Amino acid sequence: MDKRLLDILVCPLCKSTLHLDNEQHELICKADRLAYPIRNDIPVMLVEEARSLSADECSKLS
Image 1: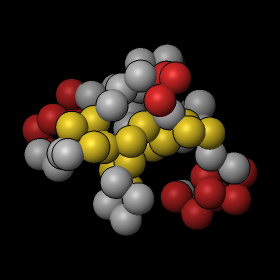
Image 2: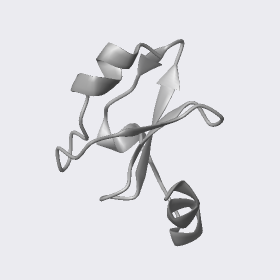
Image 3: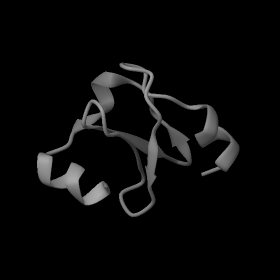
């Protein structure tokens, strides 16, 4: 994913910074514990498409 795009994208729910998870192809919002999918190199920034992260998953990202 293009670093410039990652710099301007924020969580649509809380406007927090997102973190790239290359292994899962997701953008992570730690504040809301949501993972937004990246499909065909395009981030899907819809809350209804995001998956909830468990506390364990969030702690591994720190």
